[in-house]
Image 1: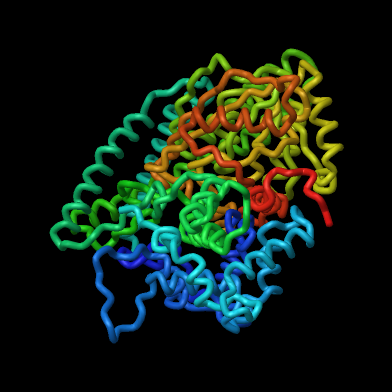
Image 2 (image 1 turned 180 degrees about the horizontal axis):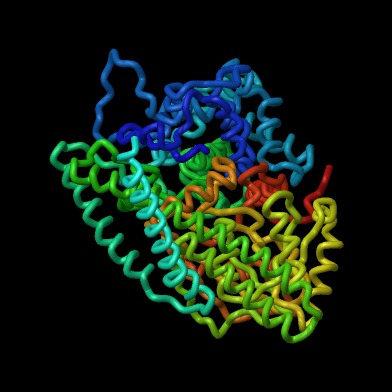
Length: 172
Length: 455
């Protein structure tokens, strides 16, 4: 049975229940009730696995979770070092990935509609959804190509406190 | 070789004497009190002694860990991440307000909405309310059982010796004793109820049946060294009622049935269980279903209704969760028993995991392994609260009634009241719950307007 995982540090000893070797991780994740009722649950689960793969290892799993670490205060950006996993940019990339399923770097109108449809289920008509999608693309699209690129996405949410919204604070 | 002979007979004699002494002690201290329902209080003294030893053991581990300057593994009882208890609506509004420069009162979709679902999803992967209910509860202090020890490497020599002694006592003394008692209890039950079954129906039969049942369950209670504290016994279930309780293990049945005379409900099994079932139903009317009948909900409801309407019949014992939960929470009650219309007598059972965890993790252990684990623990300590009877009010339906009873049980037992279905142990969640979430979200998109024009 899968137990909750803690981030570094402290990492819980694998023998007490954390998933090992990722066998059946996808199945376990799909079994989490609160995740199954999340309209974007499936997409979030797929974010842990590479394209078409059913398995992953613990490191890869943790790398995805690491994006949700709170950003440390007062750390200045060091040039020459790779982008930290939990930076604003990484968090934005994670969210963008949920929209952009074919990973072409743009959210097309079709992809927009897909996500909207997932989030509302059967509650909203096609026409209303199309209206919403068109309006959103129109507002965010700056270079007029009818799709939202990553930069346009980042610009449209620049006022938002992403560091806080996309971070999970560990209890001591 | 001839010199060994007198020695042999000496050994045989000693063996014979010790066995006789043992059985006499067994009879006097355990079986006779069980028959009459009295207690010498030996188990409680045993419990107090054990507590003192456990406290010492924990202090020793903490001291050892401090000396070696290693962090101890401490179980997080309240979860590992900080969660804010806000609703979907509030949070989405928050996100939209803070991210956009528009004056937002009209509901409108924003790209930033996705952050809410993202975060909620990852939160549940790290720590969700349900999964941790299906594995054994983690203890704050060590109870000298290696199965509950997470800090094994910090034990001193003295502690290891104590643990070794504990293993010896549990496996070589307590286990055979308990198996002997269990054997006695079960055989007495089968034989006793079969004999009573031959009597003609009447007052005598009822009286004897009741006492045979109670006596055998009490012997089984002692076979597990179960130390039970009953509260509010004046609320005990009466004829024509239904007794509902939270379910942690098959032992729940023994615990409740040793203090009251109930009619059991269940499916007929094969083997030993089946033999017991067939025997007890001769003495008093339990409700057993064939495997094929269990699927037919109407048939089940009909038989139960017939049973409760007959006031001379015993109260039914039912566990509405449908599966074993690890005794930290109460999960959704199935509404079947609450539709019948009888008075419901709720009972809350809370185990103290310090002495032995009674939770049956059926995906990890089979029945026999589970019973062996029970019989090699120190003791099973639990509290039983009999709550005042409840009936369905005219304005509530079966589901609301079930939830009301569930809350009462959770509150009394100090357990968390969860809305989730215990069936999540084995199956995926139903789509209706996802639709609820989608409905809530749609309201933030298109508002509550029912008559939006469909172009």
